[in-house]
Length: 418
Image (cartoon, rainbow, N blue to C red; front, side):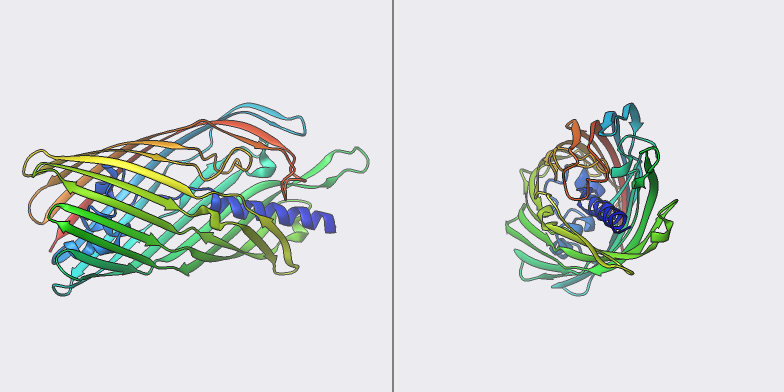
């Protein structure tokens, strides 16, 4: 029984770690910025949605503004040639990811010439991956579903005509549902493995901070920097088994750190019609150096080392004012994967990504503006090559599987100035 408990606990740790360390961070929080592949997101300050990347951007918007928007994210990841160390093989499993919507909301109000306050509502993390319960890698994951919501009160202070500072306090909710197969033991008569299925549910609300600065040394040229802190989540929930291990059902907890990020951007008006912009950001996924699972009945169950890497994002963009009402945006970007082949898991087959974006803005009048943005992401083919010798993999065995990945994203927003 002690061996079964240990293997089961380590299996839950793997599930928890995949939920947070998948690298599925949703950058798509602004329809306008998406048109430029998020180049200039910290420096452009073109509408109040740019405050997600740099709260100092609020300083450039007078009066009271409200923006409502949403993003439809349609990834496709087809899995094929899966085989495990138990001799099972799947040739083709189709699309294992699901499309999802990410809503956004922003409000800002200028208190006086120096101070502007704001509030944003976003979904910065999210994913759904699903395999059949009998696929070859079922012990490494069959369902991964993450839902998040973040509300951030913000304030911006205009120091002078050239320089502004901003700060925010992200209040983040995360809920996770994770399911996988479990080896429950071995039939002493036949030697056949006894299998079960486990499901983990958990959620939490925790708080971080956001800082930003915006500098315009001369009119039409801006530089911005934004920092979002790590948020240390304390997940609490339970684990349930479907079959022979149901006596092990219990409450559990684990700590997961939503990574910090640093973003630096530039924006420059070439003339009254053309503008160019650039962006660099780093997400500090390496903060996942270990993960500990605690059971309500058994105390500390296990300690797992993580192998995630910091990721870099580079973007270039250009915009053209077509006439008094219409603006065209274009952008390209490159984003590195958070994990290599050896430690990639089937829950999120992440890989390097190449972004191609376009957007249109329509200014109906001085108060009402519409934005749409579209992005096509081509991702490198990826593979999972787990040998079965990592911590927690002894009871799961090895798994090899290949993936082809691509993503289509469309966003829209309405901004109104009172």
